[in-house]
Amino acid sequence: MKKFSLLMMLLATAFGSFAQEAVAAAEEETKVVIPDPSLGISTTELLIITLLVFSIILLFVAITLYKSFKVIYQESKNPTPYKTKEDRRLEYEEWVKLNGEKPNIWTKLLSLKPLSAEKDLEIPHTYDGIKELNNPVPAWFNVLFYGTLIFAAGYLYYYHIGEHGERQDDEYKTEMAKADLAKQKFLAKSASSVDENSVKIDPSQIAVGKGVFDANCVACHGAAGEGLVGPNLTDEFWLHGGSVKDVFKVIKYGVPEKGMVSWEKNMSSANISAVTNYILSLQGSKPANPKAPQGEKYDAAAAEAVAN
Ligand code: HEC
Image (cartoon, rainbow, N blue to C red; front, side, top):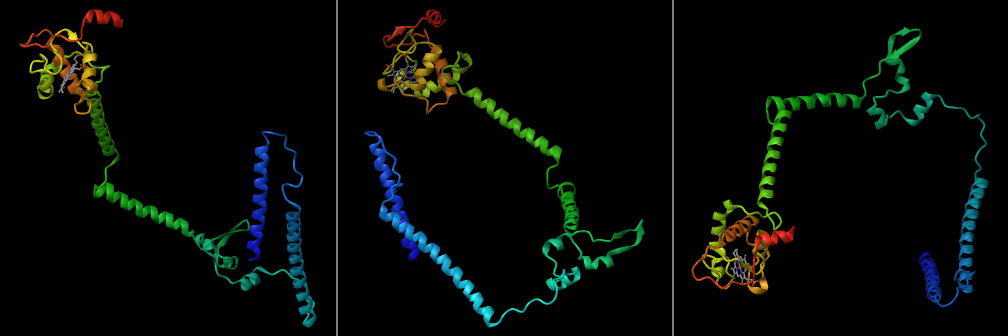
């Protein structure tokens, strides 16, 4: 409870000073702010804080005094006898006896023997007075050593006897085969993705283009491209230009406000390229019942001259 009210007090002071800072910041635009030496704390708040700090110090002093008086009282009741014997350093064996001889995990892991067991470890020969101890091999080393043996046996069985796993050269071959497949896929994809910048006149696509045209465009452009709802595609007059790129673009993006569909979403770019080639092959084919020319006459030579 005491702690809580103290916390609230501190919070209140903090917010108080914060609010004052905000006001000061707002006033800053209109006048020069004179620095406030009281840090934004009122006299009452200052008094309360001083009192609090003082009472905390008082509490510590009281506790210390209480503890010392307790010691004085206990000593006067049954005083500790003065030390008669002289302080003496323990021998190692005594220390071991006092502290117990249980080895810890670290000692076990390193297979360390206590110094008291040194006599039993001595190998009975000396060289220039130097003795040798027959220390056991540490546990961690044995675990590693026998671990490698077991691993090797498993490895040998898995790769060489059971032939379950792929060996290095086989692994290399499969990786290469996979890469070849990925390469072929990539090349096929990049070859089939044509756009208005890479489309070209290619007579080998005309047959495919005719199929695409018959399936999708006849309703509006007529069976021979002579024009119905859509314009005549066999004459030299074009609404949107007569170059391969122009035709490809119109088919791809369409002219939605005039009733020409955008085929981008429903037709592969390869098919758009094919039907473009088919349409251009119809130039000058003079079908029956042609629709009257619309747009401007397209002059390939003139267009090229403009482009260059
Ligand atoms: C729903 C009817 C409709 C269908 C289906 C249609 N078109 Fe069109 N197409 C039009 C109309 C209408 C125009 C004229 C747009 C304009 O006035 O700008 C047009 C214009 C064109 C043009 C531009 C002609 C020029 O003079 O510039 C081409 C090329 C074309 N269509 C190709 C196709 C192809 C290829 C298909 C089939 C994949 C197709 N259209 C399917 C209605 C259609």
